[in-house]
Length: 135
Figure 1 (cartoon, helix red, strand yellow):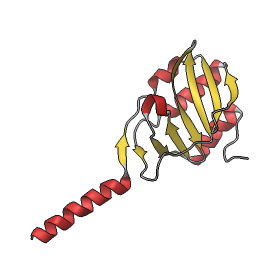
Figure 2: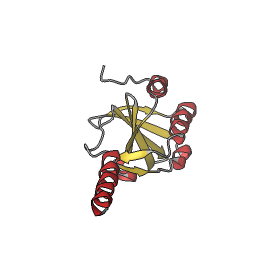
Figure 3: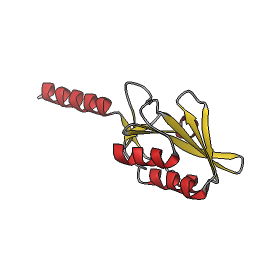
Figure 4: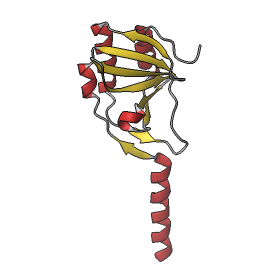
């Protein structure tokens, strides 16, 4: 009986460790942005977007992905691009996008990531005039 309890506890602990810690992120402040900076995975500014329609599209995109974030045991996921949102000169947060993945903005939320439908992420990237996948 004791061995069964120990085995069950071990399975639960290992299962939780393999799944990683789950997290929820509030991206609603991004809706206040009037400027969007697109940075490469090297941190270089690729473009600055001031078109309210494109900024809104990028801010609305991430609103569907507030839950299911995890801190992978393998380490942080590096996105193809980081999207940094600003209200005036004040940074209000952001997120990163890659092929089938989105990541949180480390200074704002930490090193969280989650999967996202590849087509939806690619559609957003195309709308912003960037191409995912390093090509």
